[in-house]
Amino acid sequence: MADVELSSVRKSFGAATILHELSLSVRSGEFMVLVGPSGCGKSTLLRLVAGLEEPTSGSVSIGGRRVDGVSPKDRGVAMVFQNYALYPHMTVRENMGFALKLAGLPAVEIASRTSEAARMLGLETQLDKKPGQLSGGQKQRVAMGRAMMRHPQVFLFDEPLSNLDAQLRVQMRTEIARLHRRLKSTVLYVTHDQVEAMTLADRIAVLRGGRIEQIGAPLDVYHDPQTRFVASFIGTPTMNFLPAALAPRGAAPKGAAELGLRPEAARLSSVSGAEALGGGEVALVETLGSSALVHVRLAEGEVVVETRADAAPAVDSPAEVWADPRALLYFDADGRRLRAAAGAAA
Image (cartoon, rainbow, N blue to C red):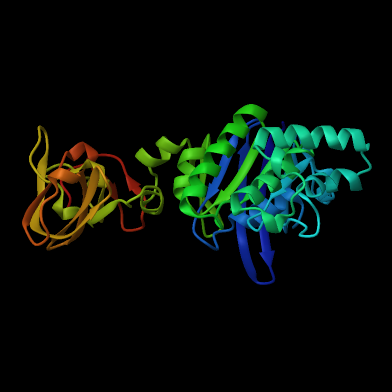
């Protein structure tokens, strides 16, 4: 295990700057997830740590050692890619041991490590098959096993589950989390999927436009977003946003541009402490099993309310949206979170 430190890192390709003076500290043994939309710089950051790119300025350190200019194979990292990057003509056993063979490790040591990784990943019966005979999930396990066998200080995952179907993604998330608990390794994991981020991370770094918007534990980022962007990006379904003038009397700071409300915090009927945000009609009901997402069309915009499926109203029926004022978040015109309650919203 090792810590990872990026200090004032900038990365440019010609006139285009991808990362802007970015600093990030990852603790030894931590599972850090980098999340953000396409083009935000998260994969570039991972490649800087791996040594596949070099920073335009700033520094990258692993285990207290500055690694700028150090070859990828000498950094003590192992990377798992989105496309598996397996050799199609080699068996699973050969794919997993190939890097160690190139490094000159004895055949007995390679065989021992292969058996250990295969056992941990449930690949014992697949070792003599070739990649073309495997499912997507099995291929990803092989890629993970190949990385594990190098006994790296840091694991780097670059959107490893994006090629899998929904059921396999859930299964592989569980396996990756279990593997981290067993190996207690340092992990940097890149994804655009905020569900992966919430379920896997010790801490999340939310990136936007080559800068870090917020870093924190998943639930802290979810319940206490610092910007409108973080509030909208983290959470499924996304947070509702409405003009702050709809806020209950005295609930918002002066000058607030928008209020935010999580769908699970919205109500379709009055409860203790709640106040009405407005009335309208039901535009859509999405049934998700035991719960439902009710889209209510207000004059000022649409609000999604999460409720029990058996309590969901019919489409086109009238509905009123209620909320506890304590559940409302406020953002100024620049998207920054407002904190102090200085009076009612204008």
